[in-house]
Length: 94
Image (tube, rainbow, N blue to C red; front, side, top):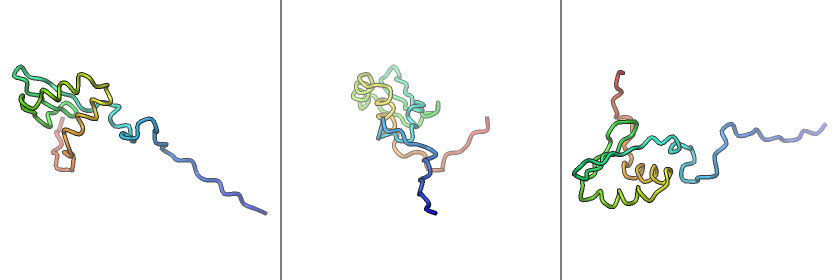
């Protein structure tokens, strides 16, 4: 009697369409931004402001965001916010 090895299927196949966002987190569009009258840009994650960019620095950012697709814009915002989620965030009782 011979046994044939059959590999188990991967339970969560990784999407190959976007190698930068392998887990598909940016497809849900978690990042947002608001532009104030004075040109200041407020970067948001889940509706909360996580970073503020001064008007003098925001001109180039606004130009990049206007010419980018939705996924590219999410990636730009993710890179700008940096590594802010590391367990020190307080959970709000809603």
